[in-house]
Image (cartoon, rainbow, N blue to C red; front, top):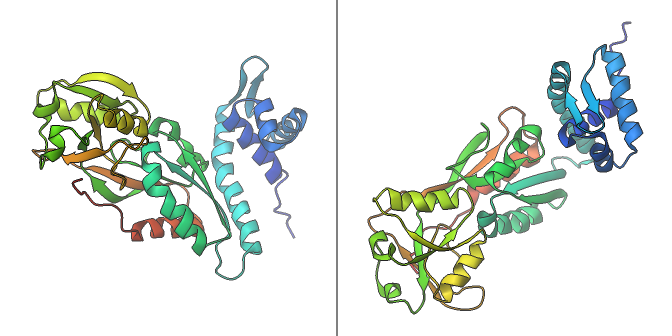
Length: 308
């Protein structure tokens, strides 16, 4: 009988992949909770078994993969994922979903998207460990492909990489004004009505680019008074009367963080809506618990536009 067992171990592959992701032996060791020498020795042993150099290790410059190393890492990822799923399946009872899901989410979407997932899906599947990562599109780049993030909820204007995707809902941007602003009594607001006023700009891509593009499409240039990466800071500054905002998400609370009333007004003529998508890997078959989360997200009755 021919022995088909490989001469390398899953642990060696795991150490190599982690070192490639972290960029240094020391960082990989810290993530794996082992000594740097254990990581280095495992990679050296793997190189000896496979008969080629997989990494270039320089003390001052970290670790980089050779061409062969890149191919080994790419092939190791699905093997490691399959081994983890095998281990989890042996600990599950029947069709019960078990294991971790890392959910990536754009920060301004988090208050809308995460609560029903963490609460409702979490209650339905108590042995699924839901972990969250709030990150902008550039920070999500590559993390779906590597498996660091299983599923993410993002705006459709900037999708990192080429994942599978499905639109969940869409909302047009609205103008946000203070509750005592005369425009708060209007049925809708034209961008021409606010362009000479002070804009409190949500300065986080793609929100800032989207806001400026709405004005540019009408040949207008807004006067930006303050920039902030915080959605709630925009609402708070608007509530205090320091300017107006252009936002997409629509909280039910008609007041700012400090309690000052604000009003959401539809833009006229209507502007194109912004889509919110769920994305997941196009190269790896997602486990059952990730597929279940995507199906659950599809089933939710997401918010629809309403005029405050």
